[in-house]
Every structure is written in structure tokens, then in C-alpha cells.
Length: 85
Image 1 (cartoon, rainbow, N blue to C red):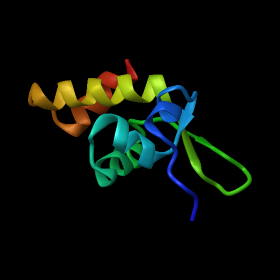
Image 2 (cartoon, rainbow, N blue to C red):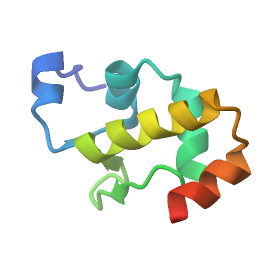
Image 3 (spheres, one colour):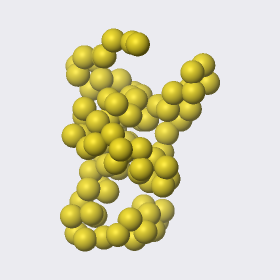
Image 4 (cartoon, helix red, strand yellow):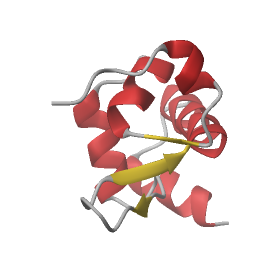
């Protein structure tokens, strides 16, 4: 098992893992995994070990947008439609 990267390193990285996104956004792992599976949170797949890599800045903004829409009472289906626009 690899050692966790420090928050300083994570905050300056172009790409992060889903676990690092949990630390950056305080959103549960299972929630981020669900957003990923529903196509709401784009990622790139690293070939060597099939690790999903997320663009840090874009992902943090997208997660905040989803959180805001959820707070407005939007359903997942409505949010998916809004994100595609």
C-alpha cells in the first residue's frame, strides 16, 4: 500500500485520486464513486494500474456545483441534465 500524499502535494497536483478528492471536498468516497459511475464526475484512466485520475481543479468545481444543485433540491436526473448543458 502506498503512503498518503500530503495535503500540500495534493493541492498542487494536476491530477488526484478519488481518495484525495474525499480529503479535498469532505464528500464521502461512496458519493464520489456514485457521481463517477453516473457520469457526473469525469476521470482519466491510468494505464499502468487502471487507477482513475481526476483533474483536481475541474473536479473540485464540479463537486461543488453538484452539492449546490442538491441543496437547491434538484434530483440526480435533473443534475445530470444540467451538467450536460
